[in-house]
Length: 128
Image (cartoon, rainbow, N blue to C red; front, side, top):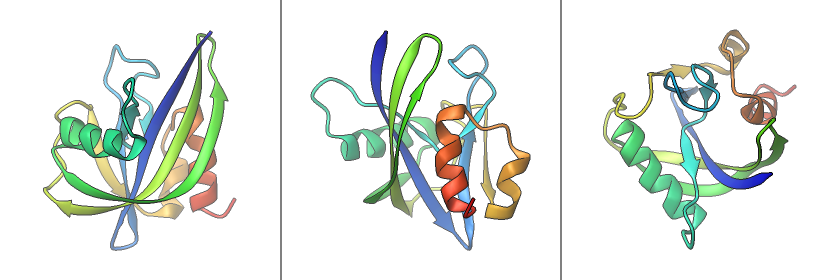
């Protein structure tokens, strides 16, 4: 089974958090997640987050501290998800490599169908 190290950005603005919807045809298609992506061979996880958010949403972020580390086993892969607290530095999110994005208040998060690996971070945010 493949083991993947993946990063996710927990970005807040005015009490809301940025979430993105995965594209049709991708792993966990149409599920919501905290934006991020796979760490490439030899890549620093923080650098991965900066790169992925520029590629997916055309925004520039500053990466802060780890918020949550999640280990989740899907049928075909084991994901180690590194969730970082991040700040939006510049740009307005755009759907470059995602289906949709939203700013969501913590109390609204349970209305969205999150990818299973992201659920522990959602639960921590909402105090569950």
